[in-house]
Image (cartoon, rainbow, N blue to C red; front, side, top):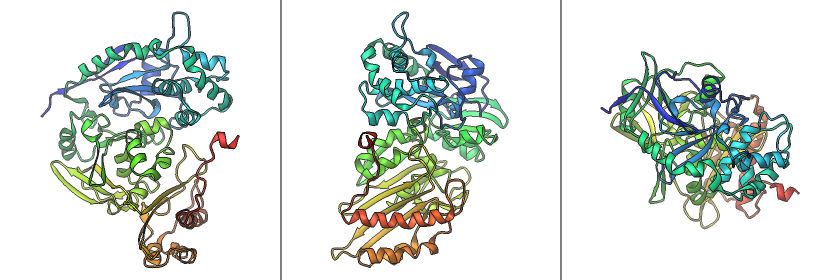
Length: 491
């Protein structure tokens, strides 16, 4: 059994922090504003959509000290052990001057009412540290999770391009402090388990994955918190009690990615950001999909395992992973079992997971040479929106042009992510042509009975799902449908 520590430790801007009285559902935003009077971090939506609460969180990784923008409104205090939290108040330039990011926003009129401005500055700060001279596309991606209703994004784009002309990164506080902060964060890694509180109202940070497995086996009713992009809303919107809560986002053993024999294996704690390059390189069709999951702040926090484990019928990764034939490794104590991902989802809110069992890793096959794979996400707005319906298609053609195998999976069309079995049956063994596809489209009613909600009507979902199959056919026969019109192309 590991040593137990009764406090969480992290660095806030330049100061060491040790807290012994922290509720499991305490958010970073509330603590910054109410306990430390750092009110530059704003509360807007309280659900990770608007970006007004954006801060940077630095963590040690295999690449060293990495800073990422996150939403403080849905980031729990229990997830901060061993990190460096940076708020807008920490930005400073030369004596008597603004930080380059702030100065650029002033000079290029990137702020009007100012409410959203600190969040924009922190997102641009994180981008500037990684990419001093970003492209339009990089800026747009960094600002997907920041909303402004009055300034207009052109002024902010101009400010983003101008930042580097105001000074070099050597003058930046996080650049100057990097070596010292790295050493201080390493010193915080004592290998202990964190336990705060008593009875049901407890906050627990396991020492490692084995410790987590043992804890969950003893307390199967505990809430597992990885990225908190879903659990955070349970608290801020539904006022749910998540006690006792086990925070696993910092467990290195769940944040590994590897590939062997054409299978990409991702630990359940790997974030969208961490796995982005691997998936983009090995399965290019997933690149635009991952880019549209929330904003940068959500992708920096949200995990692959969490997106699967919560069992949402509109989760973005299950349909493409199912179409690719992914497998899931579940663990209870020291016992593991591996199952096809598609069998994990039983019914709405019900998954094939025993009490005390958790998702440990996901195994996704890389498409074989000669096969065709595509993913299409339908939403009301392009970026940072919840899926109305999402279709994933994996096709293998025989030498004579007939369909040797096809796997079609959808999200948003049923109570769980689901294969289109009747449609697949209507296609297999037939010539891959428009007549075959149109005949198969008539089988969708056997597979799905979609619902009407705020995102789409049942009729719209049913029609969109059929049309996605037609789009897939058109693209596989040589016509590339435009996926996105960039701002430069539009101009």
